[in-house]
Length: 432
Length: 140
Figure 1 (cartoon, rainbow over the protein chains, first blue to last red):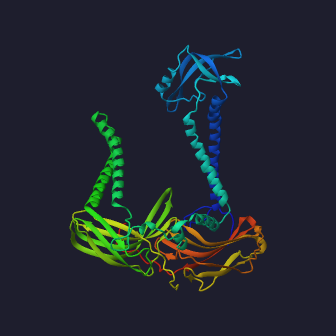
Figure 2 (tube, rainbow over the protein chains, first blue to last red):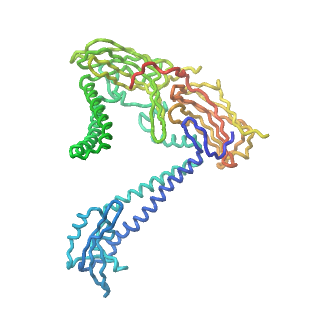
Figure 3 (spheres, helix red, strand yellow):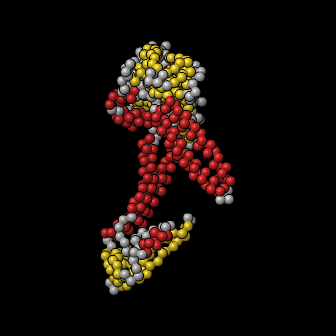
């Protein structure tokens, strides 16, 4: 089927709508706009701030002058009044007397009246001081030389615009008119050049199968490898605590102003009503944190060891489970779970959907106790299904295999702890 | 009325399913297209995802023939391609993630930036399709 320029395309797998050509033109205009704005602003800043400061420090001539006046110049701005100090000085160059108002070469306005006022006390009327004037234009003079740090800090803004604009345009230029396959081949060649080390070799042999060296870097005590837990309970608790403190800290400020208004007889009912859902959210976070604290502190560590790794479809593996704590258990189970993971853009948001597609119960025991200092230990057999899909990871899609320990504890919050495993493809199997 | 140009792709072997590490070979030819019309040709063996997530795609093997480099393209004569298939990713027909393999042939024409595109799907490996989601999955 012949294709030519299209204004739009139908939705397909990646949910792209619109013509690719039009999209590229739009992207080019977007990046060109960034480059243009960055270039203009940088040029203006260099010509009005950087070069004049350099000239003052390198080309202006030192001279003597007398302070004959001083004032705080004012200017009205959208955010209020702005101020800057100015001194009137008198000096003579080549027989010509000059009496300009000056201070530094840029002498910016500032909103801090007191700080600007304080500068005025540096020089008094009648003082004989040193000044520097422009030999090409003796009327241009300063009382203070040096470099303003804020000028170079502000330069980062237009430079960032230029980097984004130029980088985007170079990227577009390199990819312009190239098919998706050619772009993908170019990207892969670049990635292959970066693949070093053992993981790189394995990635080469099994493309898009995740390489997790951390799974096999801890030897087990009963079996070959001790599997790392996906999210450490300690880190999860710390994250919850941090979120709880930040949220409730902000809520406390809102509540303070709301309560203060009521106590002083000037109640702000909008703020009061607005605060209620945030307070409820804060209370939920506190309850959630306490629940996590109970799970972490009350339920001891869960250890999982496996006889070999990575796993292969049809393969049989020994799994050792150890659960510590002082627990009255309603049920404890271990399962092998496979879930699909899809990440997609929806408007400006990026969402991830998880979809379990396989579950194999490996072990379950009901109604028993784990005494303190004597962990519950058990062995079980894990058989990977012969037709199992291998672990897979690409930019927006993944297939994850996990061993999940689930506990139902009497009078205590339930817990789930997950341990990732990697399943390799079943090579050599006959295609039907 | 003149027919639209098209690509015809034939795969060797059983033509639809292959094992990892197996050689994939085939032929492609163009219909209703003359040598003067084509300026470049691309043949790719690739996989792409389909489903709920944004599409991912990766090329396993890529050939480009460009007349600007002095290559001769005869669209009427069947051209061959061959590659050793990789160990992964295998074809997969899941619930929200699917992995498809295909041979894609793309010809770039001189006139108006037009392209002629043809694609032939095949399966890598023999992973059975996922029928239904599991009951009471753990929340992990």
